[in-house]
Length: 150
Image 1 (cartoon, one colour):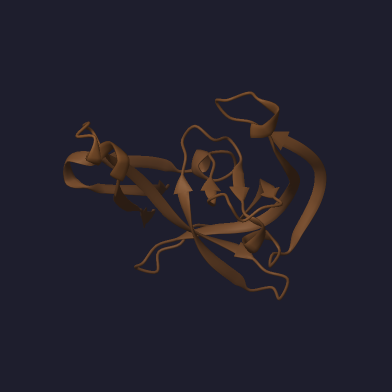
Image 2: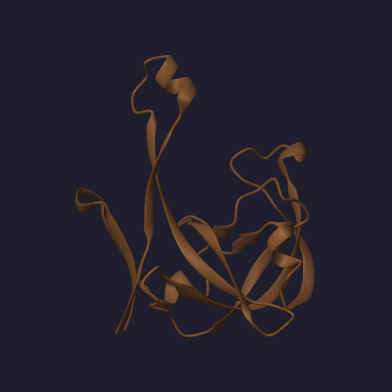
């Protein structure tokens, strides 16, 4: 069994705090993900764990370094369905693994990712072909989160 520790951060929304509106602290969970590079090594990045995202989203600064296979074009949209809120992406396959600060790491796996042509987006770790192969544990009362590979 492998246990990958995740990082939990509380982020303050300054505007809400100034308006004295609570809650103004938001909890975000991050994982360190390794992606195979063109040089056949791994580059490690912090990604926001998004249980609502199926596919991971990579900013250009990350995916340009990777050994990826582009398999198509697509676009993604979120809550707001307006044309100006749509993001064009490349669909690609990349070799990945998850690792934590203690050196624990998962098996390597191939995953489908969306590659954005922008650096104005965060790296988002989606569920498909990563978290869906692991058990996600979130213990907010203890400020702990981890992924478990059985």
